[in-house]
Amino acid sequence: MVSRKSCIAALAVALAACTTPGPDRPQAPEPASGFRTDLNAVTARRQMVAAANPLAAQAGLETLRAGGSAVDAAIAMQMVLGL
Image (cartoon, rainbow, N blue to C red):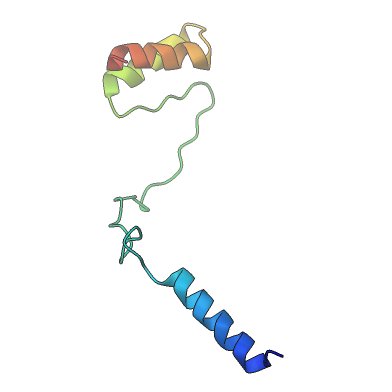
């Protein structure tokens, strides 16, 4: 018969083996991504697009203002970015 202490010891060893970093697990967390927390949320009443390139954002905004859908705006922005 297995004693309760033996079961607890075996469980502790098994849990320690699961949390110990191995060769496929990094030792430390990855460096920060630079996510900025000082920015506020922006809202719009009519149209809004977002792109890192201002020319792509302008193309998407013009597409929406001309009556295009969000998909049309996304396609226009990708065309500016060179897909």
